[in-house]
Image (cartoon, rainbow, N blue to C red):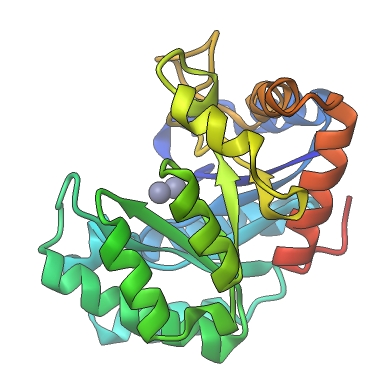
Length: 257
Ligand SMILES: [Zn+2]
Ligand SMILES: [Zn+2]
């Protein structure tokens, strides 16, 4: 039994065959999926999907790429949406200085605002950080995000960074990237993490693990990521499934499998 803690099921890539995608996840032992919105329309679609399936939950918030497009009214609307029982976290929020699709200053401002919203709603925070580790840590610290805690999604940093996040009250979410040849550094980090600090995700439709690299990713493939984590840590898949599922249930306050 596995949980895919981060997928984007509302994106056009799944428009044609979402029921089959979800069926394949169940067949692979992935009974629970958290699907993440990136802007207001995407958050609304995400919640509709969560309402349609008992074991799918929603995460709502404004992605750093979309930070420049939205205003105060959008954020207020999303806060109303987030009071729905199927919404289990606020995200993904953070900083992406790799692509800089929104100006960095606006990304930072929206990040701080959304940390406050998540805290106010008592929802765990799902953090996206790319090429922005120092700035992300500084803002999380300054805004006391650790009081709420949450997830560092699609983690790609070094061991020191991982332990810094763990100390602050976040868990580390491991993507399919860990199956890539070049991900030796990430595999070393995962070997040394405490069991209570790890969860797994696909970030579907992006970042499909080997042997599907370059193709559309889907929640069923989180199993390949968990298998790699098991191999690295010298554990059985069933052990990794048990710890990551327990951690995800704790962090997101899930009452299902
Ligand atoms: Zn992300
Ligand atoms: Zn994402």
